[in-house]
Image 1: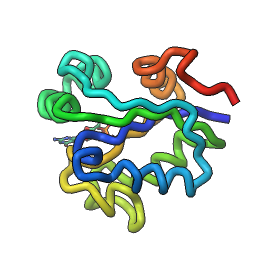
Image 2: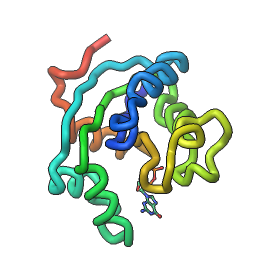
Image 3: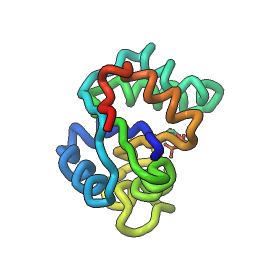
Length: 139
Ligand code: GDP
């Protein structure tokens, strides 16, 4: 069993897409084993996206991610890291497959509704960024 971090980004929460995203992942046999709502400070968003700090979109991305409420979840399932990435679709919604969350709902390469860890290493960093061990259900 693998774990991944999912975030419903400020655009997704603001547009009322929490239920839609959760419905899709539950229908895909991914279990939510931790969940909270929060609003990141700019510093917290910068820490979360530290791997991107040299990228030209870093300031814009971290401003966006700290602009409103997000829902952060830990998902568990077999191969859940790659299966959740498939459910999200490509970073650029214009390149995302039909039926993916980003293809259906993203409005911009940055405002793409959801985040999902891209490897076991980043999942472990990202889960630990938001949750302590008492907040994650041990099934
Ligand atoms: P992800 O793993 O699919 O989320 O993609 P990345 O790790 O490459 O990028 C992180 C996030 O940065 C993306 O989800 C987008 O919100 C944003 N992003 C990626 N590429 C660009 C870009 O070219 N321009 C802008 N403004 N934002 C971007």
